[in-house]
Amino acid sequence: MRYLAAACQTDFPCPKDRKEIGARVRRMVAVIEQTVAGYAPFGDVRLLAFPEFAHAAPVYPTAKQLLARLAVPIPNEHTDAYHRVAKKLGVHVQTGTFLERDDRFPGAVFNTTCLVGPTGILSRYRKVNPWLPWEVHTSPHDLADYPDEPFPVVATELGHLGCAICYDWLFPEVLRQLAANGAEVLVRVSAYMDPWGATAPTDWWTVVNRARALENTAYVVAANQAASLAHYPPFSWPGGSMVVDFDGRILAQADPGPGEKVVVAPIDLDALRAERARRTGHQMLAHLRTEAYPVYRTPRFQRGERVQKRTQRKRDVGGKGRNPDRNR
Image 1 (cartoon, helix red, strand yellow):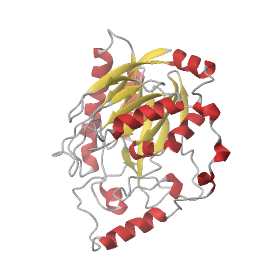
Image 2 (cartoon, one colour; image 1 turned 90 degrees about the vertical axis):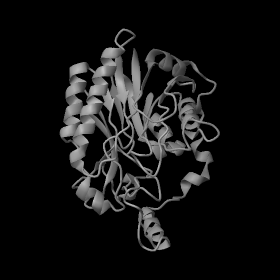
Image 3 (cartoon, helix red, strand yellow; image 1 turned 120 degrees about the horizontal axis):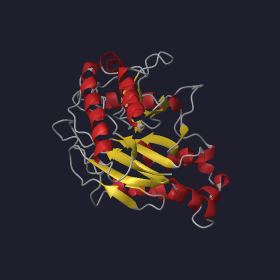
Image 4 (tube, helix red, strand yellow; image 1 turned 60 degrees about the horizontal axis):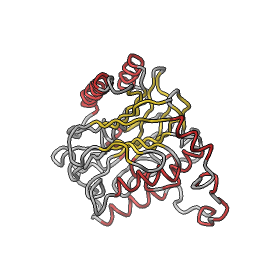
């Protein structure tokens, strides 16, 4: 019950059309193959994660434009490519995010990552907390009677795997729910821009990854976007992808800065499970007094509020929306 996990960074130009996605997928499949082969003398790389917006970013200011130019259904030819390489190599891949359309929800565009294993797509996670005010994605929270599990956890031979996307990790409730659903390895698919990266004094990326690991007694595999300012304006992206153990110790981390990079570190499920079973101290999941917090008894962010905020933002800037070259 020990294997290597790889956090893989990308540095692609931001696509303006879905026809450009295929080239990015081919490169990420090559990275998977190279990583598995290259690290074979040191161990078996079985889990690989890629960043948010690795396929496409919201470079247009409205959901209607994103649906017309960049959104894709899931499954698709790209998830098929990940399935083929996962089956060939016996690995699990947490994909970079897609801008997803779903005929069940007309007009909605989701920011979505898939866990793909040797048998195909195992789970689909849609970002619950879009990065307001810039992201125009739909949250599952905003849809009445949303039929799917918003926080899926999958039982695999690599342990119980759960994932959340970028801004979701600023809400400890998201990762706590995944842990409550059984997650042992928490995967972060992210596009965390400067200055909130891996460098002091605002090294939110590092601090949050370590905090979510230790407070949930879980491993964290965190892949961050590492595109240069020229590729993804108006932000630069610091990378710093990492693997963190269940006590918040950084096991491996890429040096901060743009560019393709891969870091690997061991996931020891036996050690994790032994600690969860043995500990009576620092057992935050068991010691959680849920009824003690009245803040969770009253809804704060109502369904539909995202749309109201976006409408207000457009009024505030003269109804012009944002620069279509801006991506977040």
